[in-house]
Length: 169
Image (cartoon, rainbow, N blue to C red; front, side, top):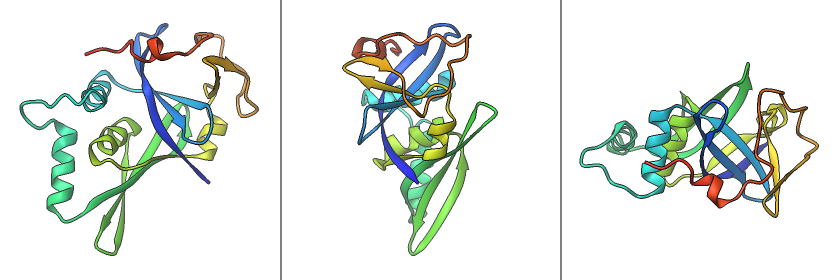
């Protein structure tokens, strides 16, 4: 089963100083953090903040190529998590043909934002993620899908809007 998610925000991992995209289940308070590269975080942040670059960036180019070929991005799906690496596919519709492109989640998310298409996460990804948390009134709480926390990862006790906006361009 796949769960529809929205981007809740971007933040910086305080221990690794790495950008994180926070996805939120549209039907619950469950959050899924995905660590991404700085360039991909920048591409996501530009689109979230509706900042138009003077020339097309890579994800804008990809969107333009897809559209010029007569296809459209139907949705993206984060399909699996293996050895702490997330995997995704970009689902395209070209006429009656459905095409699937292998992708990094960060690139798929950046394209999804530009294409205004939904983001889905396979339920097994959520179950297998050690870092899935449930947001209740801004407080992180235990969730039956969670596994024991890794000693190296320290999440804030509270996740609020100020935490989500720490990644500024």
